[in-house]
Length: 318
Length: 221
Ligand SMILES: [Zn+2]
Image 1 (cartoon, chains in turn cyan, red):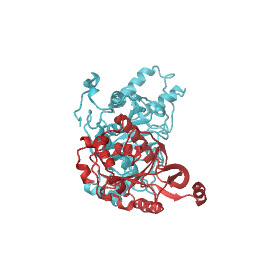
Image 2 (cartoon, protein in one colour):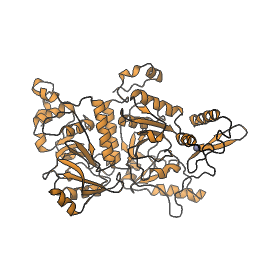
Image 3 (cartoon, each protein chain N blue to C red):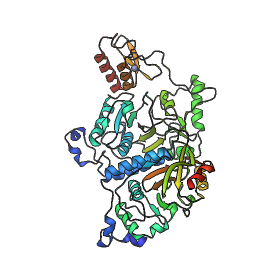
Image 4 (cartoon, rainbow over the protein chains, first blue to last red):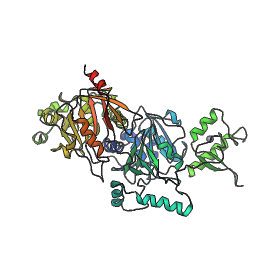
């Protein structure tokens, strides 16, 4: 296979003519496609696959990129988000990669996308039937931090022995009075497999349950693919006396006034000024386009341009 | 079958085997795969599909196209007896797909079989292990027709409330075999039904309930 990574300058100079559609060779795509089908048939189970080198380092979503490359076609419209934003370096690079390598249309609008590749968020706008959301996963094994040995975690999944996970969550409660896990909060899929939802905030966990969209998860370094079909029960682990709760925010979004959405803190100046704005930049822009305003939106705050520049700076650093 | 496989498919004797492959395979298999993925993610939904594959007449072009989309030298394929005895088909598959043929159904990643009364039992195919339930067979089953008439009511992951599906024709034992397969979860086989012009899937998670018998009586006429 053509596994030699190329630099972005090569890509720009047109050297991609030598590469296959969507970069991966056909044999690799078939292997990944087979893993995806088994993942769908066994919701929440991590299917091993032979991860390929991609022209980007691990940590840049090589697992998600390989999944997207194996499913995407000329009729697709792709959206890429990183922590909710379409304009971070990571999101822009991956979007440009597929625009070039697969000639797909791209969009920032959640509703227009047929495939959404994401790092660490699920869009606020409800996904609909026919959409596919591809998650970039760094550590797919939810039991890994409790048990480092793969042979052991595999056995635990095989016999559905999840006692350790419950002990860990309960220790949180004993020490802190609540379950302290806010990201990568473990879920149980279809009443069977405990699954890591990737480092999304637990705020997004309820969106995974009975989602209309197909959810695919790719971990490049760890070489695992897993999936949740649409309309599948996904339950966040909890206890009767300590039920699962999502993060809540006291103020609405400072730009669009949105509530019930996940907010990021943005530092405004070095005097300790700060505001909270939608993590989902498309959602926020859409609301502002429709006339919604927050406490610090441009009518009130002087310049929208300087503000959004500041926000995207924050996003890129995250 | 071993004899056929040892023939060099590039020699004149097997010239017929060399024609009739998928045109524009990169894009055609992408399109086919997306339909298969969608069909597996939403069990029982019927996905019309076209292909220009021209395998020997013993299988549907669409069956060949589905197999070409998923199978290759890394996956073994089992053909039911009547198909395995067809040297033209074996040569075609060898040339265009290059998958090794499995001698036993239990050894195959993919199996190609005809639906109908004589269909082999599901129990004979690889169901994966408790540790690796993905190491299980995907059965590509040719049937005469697929429709959304309510012979079966399907439920489970991928299905909002219920999907109805009629698969014509299957062994009368199929539904009870499927219940056994479903009960093995996370182990089990998965099925891609192929009619001449469409596919529908049953992953192991899908429950089949027989719809009211009057409904299926009606469609017999
Ligand atoms: Zn907002």
